[in-house]
Image (cartoon, rainbow, N blue to C red; front, top):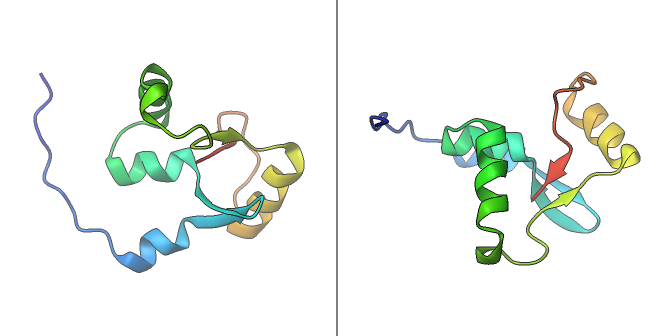
Length: 88
């Protein structure tokens, strides 16, 4: 069984820096949400998919290539095939 890890406070500025506007909506990338919840991105996505009925219909969407490139430039990340392109 997993032991609970101590929770490190997260600053409001840190959270705000992870919010992006895409398609006129404020979103966070799945990897950033996973970091906040201290889980792996694939684990977060798996749990959302398993419990999709608990989330609003527009909770998650896939970024298109243009949106992905824009965000990559905006937040300064390199293209990596392991990166996720999910906003939520």
